[in-house]
Amino acid sequence: MQKQLEICEKQKQTVKTDLDSMQSIHNALLSDHDRLQTLHDMLIADYDRAKYDNSQLKLKLKNQKVSIALIFYFFANN
Image (tube, rainbow, N blue to C red; front, side, top):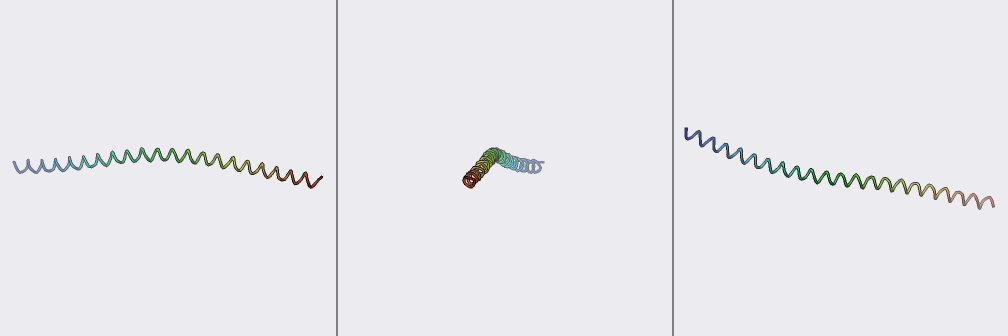
């Protein structure tokens, strides 16, 4: 009976050690997830800003091309 009790105590300690290890890993993963979520949100904001800036630059380029075309047209007809 004493031998069985010792075996059970050893198993209990092993399980507790494994549980503590798993809880530590779990907490680290939760922390990593939070950091990755923050990074993801920042990257989405950066992407949206870059996309907006790109569309504005394309619009400016288009307007500049139209202005240049009008200037050439004006000088060609005068």
